[in-house]
Image 1 (cartoon, helix red, strand yellow):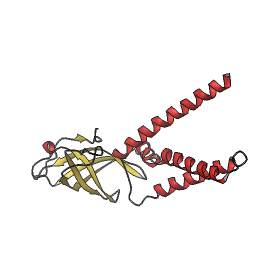
Image 2 (image 1 turned 180 degrees about the horizontal axis):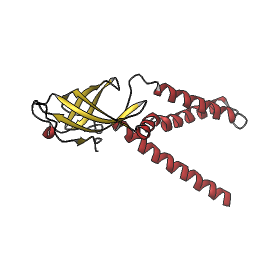
Image 3 (image 1 turned 135 degrees about the vertical axis):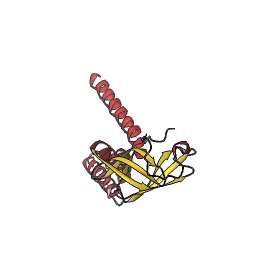
Image 4 (image 1 turned 180 degrees about the vertical axis):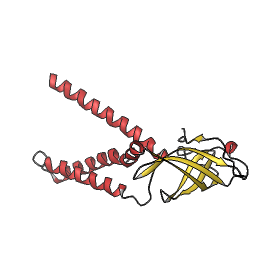
Length: 188
């Protein structure tokens, strides 16, 4: 009886940690930007398939029906894929330590990036990042955009696989930089 209670609390603790990870990792997609053309998606899919195959193969003595084996494989694959999907973003978030400044041309788009299924930021700061080799859109407000500004200066932390944008400031038409604004993820 005691080992049953211990096992229950252990599984409940692991499930709680997994839920916290899923909630934390899902927020990283608004903060971390991976380089274009990265094979991260294929790597995560391959790891999920291998783990699911290994676990299904190890349970072959207990599970004898093919339908049950298929369902075991599919369930474990989905669980592993959900767990690992944002692992590259988490890796970039915690390994990005080199600060880089860049100055790029930008445009302001309305509405901005999505906050939820039905809400968007007031405005979107759109630019092409040479290091990431992809277009980026950050949340901003019309009130802080300097009239006549053509360039924005960006501050980001980079790692080998991606970047985390930390601050930006607009440069006025006569070349005077304005104050730094923190890059904040869209709030819900």
